[in-house]
Length: 121
Image 1 (cartoon, rainbow, N blue to C red):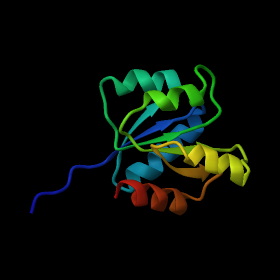
Image 2: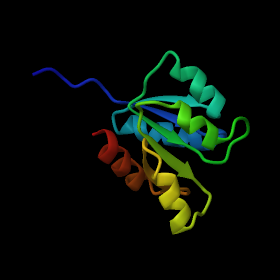
Image 3: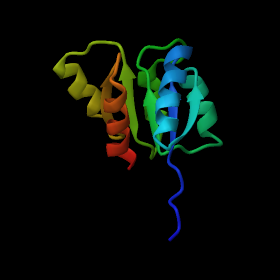
Image 4: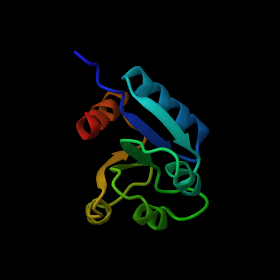
């Protein structure tokens, strides 16, 4: 039986410690991980790579995330943010078509792995 190709997750966060800890957790759970330091870096990398999911921090320097998201086509996105949002804001964020989830930082490692698995398998 052929093994399924590993799913690839892109982690976009301006904080090095967040990128590396999320990368470690996901790699331990069998995913390939690519990282980007902000929305502009993410868009640049998307020209040559197509991850199965993007974990995207909301607050980063550079192009605002609200301007980055519409440029990402056909790839599910889950926000990864320390920002506390109200239910209304969360609904509005999740209302965009390729937004699949909102993961609150600091996150539980098992919860992060479970949410990613739920989205990409």
